[in-house]
Image (cartoon, rainbow over all chains, first blue to last red; front, side, top):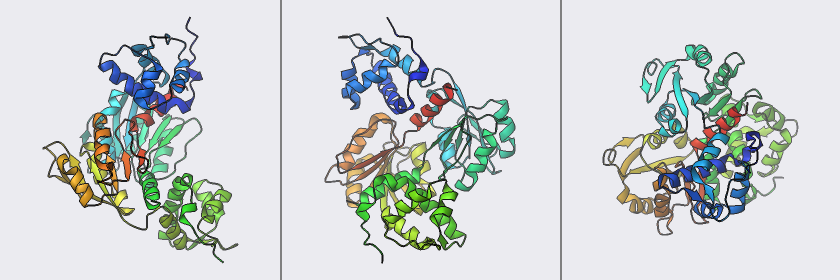
Length: 214
Length: 214
């Protein structure tokens, strides 16, 4: 009965919701819950049940009326859809306070993001290890990235160094295809490279913007 | 000639752009640039000149045709508009790796966000200092927050503790009106409290989502 499931059908706008479902479903699974209705899930995460059913419809029709969705299967489908059913290799470029904190952040490895190396230009930190991340010299960046077939680069260098750093690793012969940039500057990459930006200063400015209007 | 400037007119959607302009204009000012045209600024940050002129029009009409905008005045207007022309008091709740890294993040104080305290439940870290943030016991949270008239709370506690923590400080008699939540869980607050969420796991899932489709 299940409709053929084409992963390519799941639109990118659903990603934050899929991440939210996944987190809640894992919690429920850990507590022994085996099935859940869209309405029960909706109540738990303050979303609309119709929206949830629409999102889950991309996985084929496996919700059973009056019973609900099979929780382990739902987790499996969401993980597949998010590309979490495999392991991705990650480097962190910039071993300052933020970079080293991220290196020790357990949430990464739990999701299949495997830190394979860190890089920094300061002799003070080169050779040190933070969690699974041993810090190498920036001069080794290209060779290491190519040889280890690194998938994802997390950029925590200062703003002025961010673009040049990214240019080095997204070069076609090096091959990084995904960048998570924490440097407080807008960065550019070729069209086939996905870039996400986490800008802590901007987030704080949103807060002060609203506070100031009270 | 200047149009009366009503700060309330600047819409929230412009905040990320204003943050971007501010950063670039400060850079330019540091290099001695005194005036800039919308087109020159547009070229530098890969935005549309008409969009920039529209955003700046909220500040009144002070761009001079053929000369451009006065950089120091523009910086001043943007800061006023973002509520950055005053100082905001900030606490960090959760003195784990991320919380302590954020406490030492210089970008905060540079923007007028003044860390006044940190909180944690672990006796191992209570009493320690990270940058300007001395860690206090969670039992002191409400009293400290009220007495110091804390504006902003940065939440870096584990997911399961986030909502209860936020509930304690946004209570009307305590008075926090802005929350930056790093806990990987959706949180709720009264309507008059602004909440921003930084979800590192979701950002990584965006990357794996796209990588998996290549």
